[in-house]
Image (cartoon, rainbow over all chains, first blue to last red; front, side, top):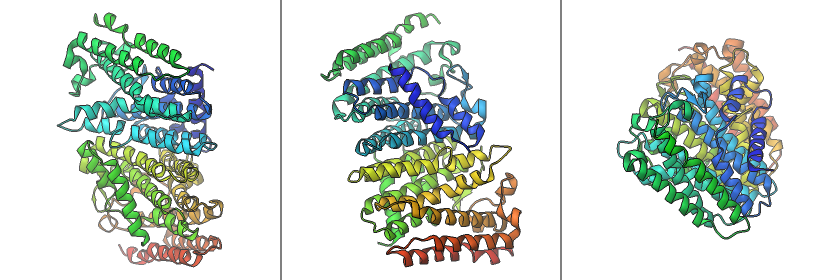
Length: 289
Length: 289
């Protein structure tokens, strides 16, 4: 089954688990609304690619890992869009969760999706509980404090920011978790896969900075210019457009050369190259905006 | 070591893990602020009592379970106090997390404490990953959707409420998780311990309803009359004070008689009796308020 079909199927299975009756209807709907239809599913794609490169001997665990990463990402979007953070009216081209369902349901939807991510891992881990416990730990470290996406968001409330820790936590951590969890789900050592996640995370952060600085809201599906409004560090402000594009390409090059020798090496290089094409070509056109 | 010392030690160990540097200072402080000093730590006490009654052969796992239950409870308090829910100015006799640190930090503190709960379980489970995975699953089911405390809070946004599902999710689930996780942490079958958790949860819900209806804010350490303000079901409104007290005593009686035959049975009965004393005697005095 192609990666994208596996991911959607794993997400729907997790949502079905959370939506069993009786459950409060609005919150139940809001979970599905916050997850489907999705964006590029970059993190779960990366996780499955690494799992396949590592043999993927327990597909139920790599599917659950992919779903868990995306559930956490969707939870972070629902919370980041809240009035006390970005107060974003739109997300993925439709009203943000709190605009569609109200603030209280958006807080609870984010909470529930975080919990569902861990539940999905534990539920899939019955036949390989040692891997499941390692996956739970890896996901928690990429999500919470002191080094996960919560920490990344927390840095935005500080007057003095540790920039390296900020980027690492805000974007890097979940990409590193994606590659490491792909390896762990397939029973392999995660260490050789850390660099790949880190470099793709870096490239993704720069591409996100470029989009925030250069695209319009309709194209992007969410409000733009948020970094400038919220005085957040942005690679374009720091390096200019050309400098940022050069850094993005260098990060993707480093990502490809970090891929360890493995049976799926060629396929994985191809996937990263496709990510590179997806992330970079929009830029020259968008510079006209 | 007495239960309360073990619980505080396990909580501090979890918080220390979340506060390793570099981490954003405000969010880091807010985590500790939301957890220490605590309330009665009823759920972790119950969990440890059952673990001891079951032999407690892996104390690192029962400690982590106790801490995880309390971290989830503290997270739910930080989120429930937010302006979009109760908008509570005080909690445990001091400003609520969002009043002390701002709304964005309170959202992130709740998120981080939820994640930390799962991290604590996974980190403690290295030598017994099968139990750790089962504990993660039990905690997730008691916390998320469709049957956990998020679902309980979600029912409060519905015009038509399934009352049984509401109470079960809002209060019952975490008490049931407390007894079941105590058994699982000690390597025992959780089934015989479900009833004890359910009955204590019921008693606790009624006691909470009584306190909300009868005490003043200074005694309670948080705003009172919230059920009436938010039009939430309350046992006192439904049964009157005497009826509610009678139901509370019946639930505690049922709790005691549900305790399975085990080496720690007498000690556990004594602990439930002490809970009963703690929950009931305040009532007659408070009725004068």
